[in-house]
Image (cartoon, rainbow, N blue to C red):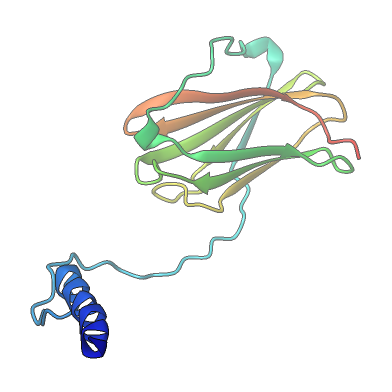
Length: 165
């Protein structure tokens, strides 16, 4: 009777091992696709600027568009209080491989218009790329477009103010 108390738990453990595949000898590796492991650490860059007066520019008043879920990317739009600099940071996302270009239109409170392109001569934006634009002390309007898989989406249309602490 005492030996059956030890044998039953040992058989249960062996049974679990066989069911889970722990005892199989898998000498052939599964087919895998080679992946390059290049580590890229981009430095923030400011894209080229084109300045135009508001008399020549009609602001886009259309709605913000929702990108397909597989093409969505994360963008962070902030404004620094002491310097009034506006920052648009590209953080990547599921649609990183589809993203071709990011464009920011800045309608400053003083009546000027500036256009920024996040590509800096590269083929496409990479996570960590940043647009830094000089804003005003008042609220400035930023409209952001993402060119993804050949289609342009208006993803942000915000009035940005410096955060009060």
